[in-house]
Amino acid sequence: MNESDSSQPRRTSWPATGRIVTGILLVVLGAIWLIAQFMGHWVVGDFWPFFLVLGGLIFYAFFFMRTEKPAGYEGMLFPGTYLIVLGLLFLLMNLIGWHSMRYAWPTFVFGVALSLGAMHLFGRREPERRHADLLPAIKILAVISAMLYLVAIGGFYLWPVALIIIGLAIIVGGLLKK
Image (tube, rainbow, N blue to C red):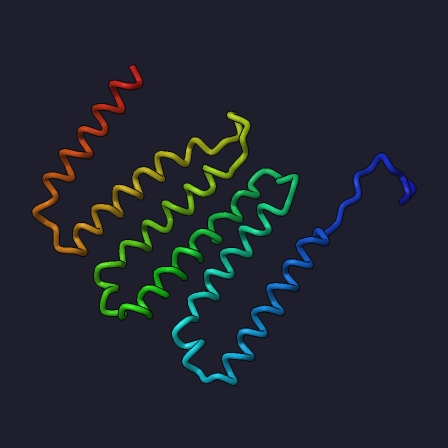
């Protein structure tokens, strides 16, 4: 087979735009880190969660820059979303105090639900290839995280109300399917 055969698509290991964006992100990251060293440790100390957010955005950039996405490529969105959620949570804890984590820890579970939701939302558009099987997991994790938030804030008296709302939602969902 001849290398100049035009019938075969040209495959590159990494698109040029991906390399350029990665290079720019590394230069920006290095510049921020260098400036932080000259200004004092406090800049990095309080805002290190932005590095997690930046890592998540890199996953999103790789996903959306690729025009032809192979099967399973939406898996790039899971770590991207989870890194963004963790980065924002940790940034909030740095700003308001880590003692507040006793109320915010259910965000770890909710972050998984959001990550699966991103995979479902931005996944393949063909009905047979869309991740409809993710919906039950997303719903279960969202309910679990909501219940954990109630536990975290000490809202034990709200459990009966939560059960009533969940039960009504299931009934209405069942009636709408008929």
